[in-house]
Each structure stands twice: as structure tokens, then as C-alpha cells.
Image (cartoon, rainbow, N blue to C red; front, side, top):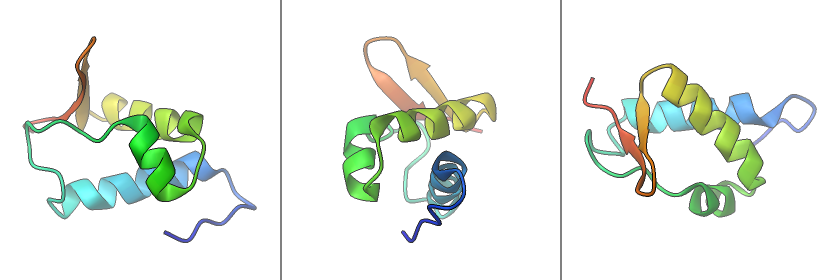
Length: 75
């Protein structure tokens, strides 16, 4: 993923994760990758991925179960 570092990075990460969700890369109801794993894969800080995941939660694309992680919504 090519990031434009002159712009805020977390919206770009959120857009990439939306693209992956729309493409079916993550099955509905399945556990979403951990923040640290995605941060390493995308070469960004974990806090950047946390903001992106929070945006996807607000959109209803993901939900989080305390102590278990984030999951792909069935919607």
C-alpha cells in the first residue's frame, strides 16, 4: 500500500481496510487481524491502525468483544 505521508495516514489505512472488507478478504463473522499485525503489514504505527479500526467500528463494519478482539460484522 502506497501512503501519501503529506496527508493524515489513518484515513488512508481505513480506506484500504474498507477495500479489503468489500473485496471479501475477511469473512463475515471472522476475527479481524490484530492491530499490531496490521501495523506491521502496512508499515504504520499501531495507533494509526487503531484510529482506522475505530472508524470502521463507528461505520458498523467491525465490532469488538472485550478480551477477544475485533470481528467482521455480518451486515
